[in-house]
Image (tube, rainbow, N blue to C red; front, side):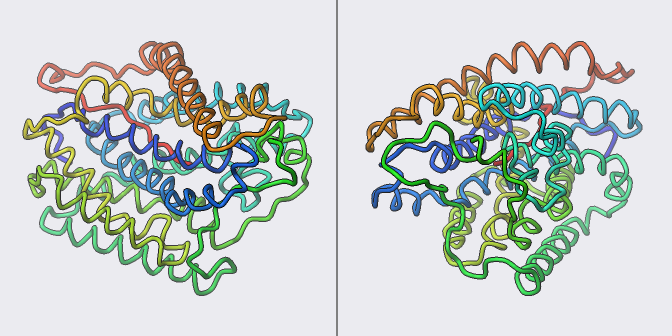
Length: 412
């Protein structure tokens, strides 16, 4: 990581964040909006087969790799580690807390049950293999536990990454991938959990053809449960922060590879085809592999190619202003989408019956409300806080530096 390297904005990566966040929204809307009786129909099961859990997981993988790339790209060697941590905390926690408060009010969360909301609010809940804490409040926030680990580790490990000779960067990528394959294979072979290839992430349904008043993950019955066991292998391979840490460092290595001119690909054809092929293969592998490992290398190639396009002045729709705006609000969009689903369910869906068109209509309304709420959070929470409290101190050579995007990753 050369301190003299000129940093540049990477609008394509910012725009791409939106599509990853949108993929997460599509999966969550499919699973968490309790629209009966349509969710019990054969048509719904067919749609869910074409839009499986790994669609949302692909968004997670993209953001974890992207986080590593952008943090490495924008990091100033020699800068204050405490200042780095301060910026990361201010980027994550305010938006997270706003979304959590909205959900607490919308779902009438019992504040007397501290286990439901305190671990979630502190972003330590994904370290516990228990769905009462992992998914007890704002379900998508589990990925921020991993992001905090990424950010904490980076200033400590960055000197080691910088010492890797440029000629061996690809070997380092291969070593990480080999480690991940061995890790997830050990989870598959030796840890209790699903061994088949079936899509295990499906709506939890209750009896009747009338839509319930709450999505199950925000219902009084959900919050009242003492323990909701989760498959150990699923937790280890998907939500356990340490298992996801290598994905972040794939992004870090990709940033070095691009910065040193070792990745000059600017055409998206082959990276996109490789990602599409990897995604297709997720239908025929066990859950331990379909959630991240299979898509990691092509996802890393996509991130590197998008950055290379920006550096070489190759413009495209994803780098234009509307997409950059959507990319900027994507973190808030991700965090507020589930609370919006809870609100729409409680105010409009519960107690009624809907078919296919009603299902589409309520998804569309939830999407629109989530975008509006995300824009408000970005404008009136994120931007003011980052501008006032998280400004980088000026440096003597700042006039020669163009800042990269300040990105935080998100997940389902």
